[in-house]
Image (cartoon, rainbow, N blue to C red; front, side):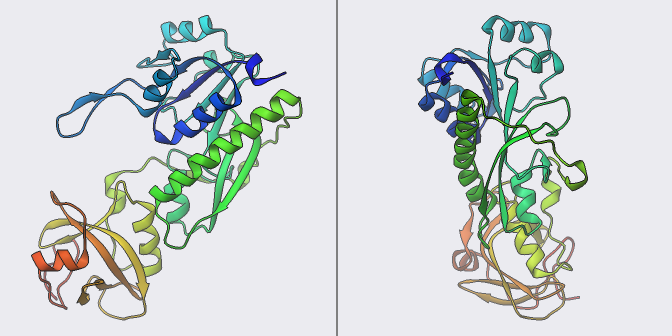
Length: 319
């Protein structure tokens, strides 16, 4: 069997999914349709914006479907009419019901951005960095009705850089996801694809992120806060408070210094040094609410700060 023999439907929505769709195109798959999320308002003008997967599919002349709810009978009917042999799913944004999972004869295969069974859920890339992991990867799996609980097929890993952000890791894993799916497709066509059940006892969960997850607790060790900052960069961002204003932090490093947690120890052109529960955090990029992100030197020119000032909710001076 060759990829061209498979009537394949792709389901995906954001940039992360595009490399895998490109990989299926390059492999010669017979792509009979793409399902993606509906266009949503975006930007300051709140203009309706198509998802990246839709743009890529239309560029290649593939028919696009954008049901508000995939589990509705009319959406399931659309998929049935396509008679897919295989459905490939990457960050689609909707849970696939049993009525959809049972349609393709070779099943629905998902590309998940973690080394399953670790970090099941919506935010595996962020959570791996926040937890201080040094290695992560992608896993392809046969989808079942559980949350990322299906049998594993192909795993590929990579090292996480000590200062790497979620955004940077996202881009590398998107490419690795393409490679993992290409290998999965190759084995499927060769009849050598093996299913490996997940060990639930080794699993952990990466829930969807919320903006409040980013509030800095300066009593935490600097190393932990450094992981939090880069794990939430670019969204939703780690933040603290300065004179009652929300201040986002980025590009941090850990320093050996002591002081009352949340206290500014030094205001230098290459960063603000802020005391933590253990050690201190050097912050090289900052962004006040409503302003652009800027280097510490530029920030200090517009907002001079004196050592001793306190960061945090309702803390503006050394108390």
